[in-house]
Amino acid sequence: MAPVQPNGGIGVHGARLPKNRSGQAALALDTDDQALRAAVRAQLADIVALLCIRPAKSGGPSCIVSSVAAHNEVVRTRPDLAEMLYRPWWRDRRSGDGPDRFYRSAVYTTDSAGRPSTSYGPDYMRSALRGAHVPTFSPAQREAMELLDRLNSDRRFMLAMDLRPGGMQFLNNHVTLHSRTEYVDHPEPERRRDLIRLWLSTDQNRQAPS
Image 1 (cartoon, one colour):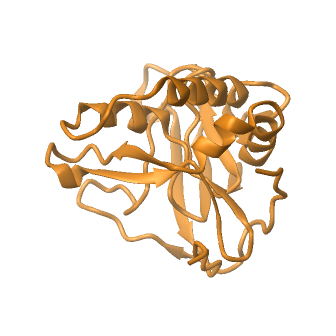
Image 2 (cartoon, one colour):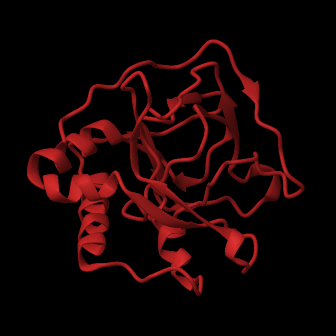
């Protein structure tokens, strides 16, 4: 296990991902966290874009984390846990209770060109334990998640962005995780926080090595 370098950035070609009946982008996993130390997560898309129409009355900055920096710190300090994070983990689709409502994927992967990608959604990994066929976390898995959660809230790897009206954010979703702080909104509906999120698929064609 060795440190990796981010490769690639924001694409200039993109297409809006198809949406399901609930209005969520297909293949995208996203929840709103209520505290800075709540779980940082990664959606399944190449680019995650955010447009601020109106900010909250107070609070709510977008917090982004370099998943490459966190990965390299895990490799440096706990290579045994880094190796485990390259193995498949159970995830919860949260769309039913049947066995097909759960799937497995690794936290860390590299494609055939050696480009890194991180998919970390601790809430969905923990709720997967509700599946009758899903085994409980091993002590090493619990330790790996605790380490990642600490690193993802480490200010060495974090940048807080306070978006104002018209402000836009574009993140390379393969090498960035995101969260937000708690916020207080306006009581008037027309003044309440309004953010538009867009999931973009680019021509990166990231394929895992065969």
